Image (cartoon, rainbow, N blue to C red; front, side):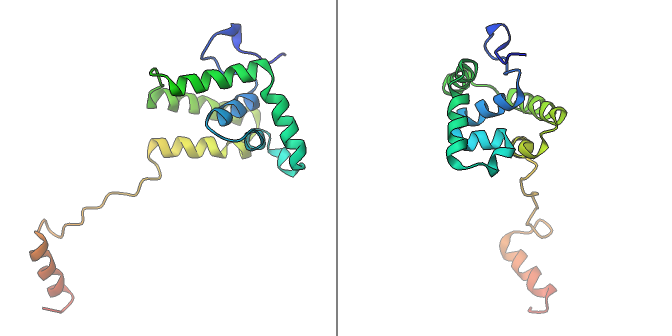
Length: 148
């Protein structure tokens, strides 16, 4: 099956999950070689020149370059996707990669998803001791540790 944008419609991910992951990484600012290594994990064992050549060849494919341009335009335009839209797209990309059996390369997508959902945010803790103002708090702490 030939990889292409479905019916040439804008906003539709590439049929090939790895090419879509490559396009997302390039549009997100990664170098071609880094994006290729992310999308094709076996290439990390390749020589740098081979990775660069393969990445360049993939980036020149019409459907991939069109998708990268579209993603960059959407990111630069006023009609940027909402956080919800991005999370939905990431969820589908994660599911597609899991179905494809490419979990190692999928780690970055999962990391981005978790960061956007706030899973890595530190837990907020109320630092007040019994709702006291700072001077009373200091006296209370001193009395508890035997200093006052």
